[in-house]
Length: 376
Image (tube, rainbow, N blue to C red; front, side, top):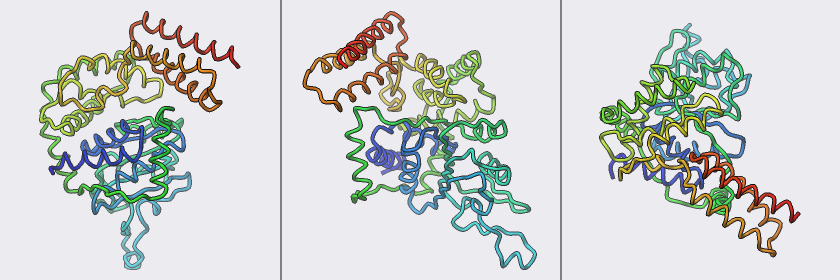
C-alpha cells in the first residue's frame, strides 16, 4: 500500500467513525498533505475535538498535543516549563517533552482565548513552524496545526491569529436524516467497540508533503488567476501571500486523488478561505459555478459535494415530505423529523441558481409549511 492509499484508508476510517463529517475530514486530509493550518468553527457538540483526536491517533508513533486555551493560559502550559537543572546553571532552556514543540499534530481548542503572553510565540509557530522563546530557536516537527472555536474573533489583535489558518471549516450538527447512523456510530465509540485502526507514519506524511510540491499546477493556473480576480472583485480579500499558499491546497487535492497534475475541480478547496460566515455562500456560489462542468474521473470526491443542488431532485424531496405529512398516523417525533428535513431543504434551496426554479421550489416549501400550521 503506497502513502496515498494509506492516508485515504485513514480518512475513510475516521469518516466511518463520524457520520456526516466527510467534508471536514477530507479537508483535514488536504491540510495535512499541504502542510497548512486548519480552523474549525462550530458550536459545542459537533465532534470537533473528537475528529482531530481520532485522526491524530492514526499517525503511528506521532506525538500529538491537544490543549483547551483560556484567557489565563501561560506559556509553560503550551511550550513546556524551563528546565530546572539548566536554570541552576544560568541557562533558560525549555523542557519541551510532551508539549507543543515536539508534537506531530497540534490541536488548540478555543484558540481565540490566546492571551498576549503566548500570542507572539504562537503566531511564529503557526506561521513559520518555528519555536522561539528567549534565545531558544528550534524548528518544529509539526505536520499540521488545527485550531477551533465556537465563534470568530471580535478583537482586532486576534485577527492575525485567524489569518494563520488558511483553511476555515464550519462544523454543524448533522442533517436530520443521518441522525440514526450518527447514534449508532456514536454508541460504538462511547463503548469503545474494538475496531482495527489503520495507521500512517509521520515520515510517510512528510513524503506526501514533499511529493505535493511536485504536482503540476500549470493546467489550471489561468483559471486560478481568474478566480482570484473574481473573488477580489466580490469583496473577498485574497492577498498575494494567501494566493501563493492556496496552491499547496490545490496540489494536495490532486495528489490525494491520485494525480500528478491539477484539474479544474481541485479549485473546490478555495470555498474554504472565508473570513466571515457571510462569505461562505458567496465563495461556494463563485467556485461551484466554475467547477460544475468538471467530469474528470479522478476528481476529488468533495469537489461536487454540497455543490449547487439539482432543482428537480430538490423539488422531488419536498414533494416526498409533503406526501409523508399527509399520513394521519404520524407520531409527534415523526412530524418533528419532517419539519427538520424541510428546514434543511429550505436552506439548500437558497443555493439554486435559476431564479424560476428557486421560486417554484420555495412556493412548494411555503405551501407545506402552511399545511403544517393548519394541522396544529
